[in-house]
Length: 275
Image (cartoon, rainbow, N blue to C red):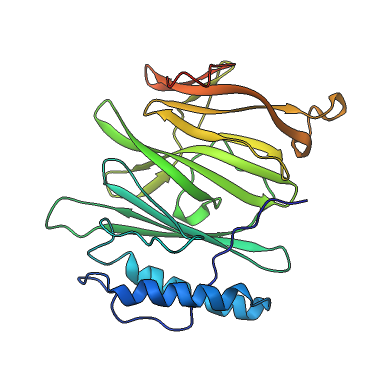
């Protein structure tokens, strides 16, 4: 009934080759790969939690390494690793799923600074929550909603740099959510998620959240730096027009395009047109 559960499982030993001020050793990748194999066959929640604690130690050291922006693990299927085209932000994220149905997201956002200054590292985590991701507010590290991010692009408007994030949220067992969000940093380097940029039907929202049936699949992707295309969602039946557990794609496409300082919704766009 439900979507493929992504869960990262690993570890019981932490290699010494990944620490701040050092480059990544080849041992780290090998250790993680072998520990994945061990965890795939482990169905005990207490063991999964313990293994995930070890993952956090390894990845927590990795994101502090000098090679974080130049290196990518090629053998770890369930570890999200994305770097912005401007090479100023990298996001490493994964989720832990337990047999009880509960789960938790883990995310590191690394912000590169000028030469001579250390990277800023932001550690976020959040439990699975069935509640909707709000579109009328910003979020910070302390109240993060939880998601797996799979793409990001920078956007510079009026001399202020932000990054547009695409992600997916699995907090509700009956509803999948894909989202478009905005990452920015204040003058004192506080991380902020959300910006009142998304214009739809005369109202502006801080982010876009697409809700649809957990057994459905939809596309949400950049078609250019200033255009984001996604499946148009409709109800499977007139009886469920307000219940997103019964929503899915109708094989037409909508898009948000950045115009005059806002991401504006366009209905029924041509998916063959990159713009």
